[in-house]
Length: 420
Ligand code: ADE
Image (cartoon, rainbow, N blue to C red; front, side):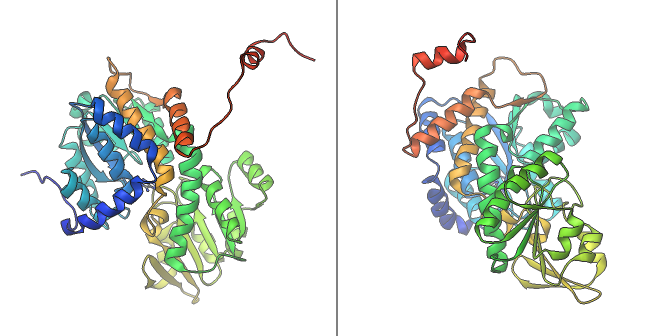
């Protein structure tokens, strides 16, 4: 018989409920969508399957979709990011089937994805594209049932574009990550704050005066570097793209190859989306006590196997810290097993940025469900009117007014005759 949910402990529901309501206070844009959805039920008859980090913010998204009339089933998008109390509250208070246990092994992780697919979703919500890729690999017969999907994160969008290029993508997916009101805020300020939060909670080591290396200067790397600088760290950026490296230099950071930075680093944080960014030669160069953390979606950025092969033993001096002792006695401290440090050692991005990300998600689900004909299987941007609406609503809820163009100014911008 198919399990109706699989969570760690239903008794955590009360605690989860309190935290979900706490997050909701910081999510007024999503809240206003929920109020509209409750009244007009635009998602009636829709089955949504979500593979997302099971957090208080995701719970508010699930409640919004349910308020709109959708049936929602959820699994985790990372084995270490599930907040078990939130999973319990969603099951107990909302009757939402959740298949997620913090610390689940890879077999359970995929069994949970299959459990969500067993609910036959018509719209998929993904964060990293594991749901979409499992569906395409194992359940191709379900592709026709699907109207479309959304993708939350940079890594997922890269994978989906690769699927589309290979002609392997079977249904349309909207790249929520690429909305301005998503990545400019969630990736930059969300990752910036939550990554530092995870590192500080895990280590309680002072950042001021330390050499703090950020690998990758995309929107996440920018946020991490900015916030580490705010803590008084001496921030070094490593990059492979000349333009981004130049930007980091002009933003005031030192830029150098990781092979040089590794030797002076007190902290190294990866946010590149690529594999084995921190590798054997870097471990060999590191100082005693160097702290390694990853903020990219998958646990591939730090070559943990290579680190283990160089080590004579490993201990757990604190929660979320594994200390590898190299043959010559140096200690390298790996946080959160190389998984997303912000979600594994802290609580993920704060609700105020997830408010915009998940407002984009909710409005995009409505947009996809409204399509009269199924869109061709491609990766699509979030419609500009949704992105603009989210920005306007966010400003409004923050009590911030802005100017508008006069008719004369609009005419000036639309003409080419007036010049010097
Ligand atoms: N990704 C990063 N932070 C998150 C959060 N708080 N909830 C859901 N997904 C996230």
